[in-house]
Length: 135
Image (cartoon, rainbow, N blue to C red):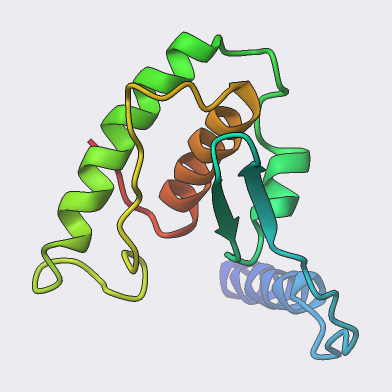
């Protein structure tokens, strides 16, 4: 009798896992995500973020604009840019597919809130997506 209960429980679990599993039908429609361009014409610079998923992250997961002060964002960006650039310069130890370009971030330039907000959130997005920490 115990064997029958055990066997029944196992069968029910297997059926439950199978029923809850993902479908083999794939959604063939793909939405092409436009790159995020951050630019300031008065300072003559431009940052283009082409990492897939960043726009979605910015619109759904990132804290809303105004949540952090510009001072906070600038300080975090200084730290993140420093670590990022050191990893770009060390391709033997770090993935060159992630750390491709050096970021020229001058701490003496006031880039404005929008640029600092988007750059900060890109670093936060990259840490989640690539499971890394910039510290």
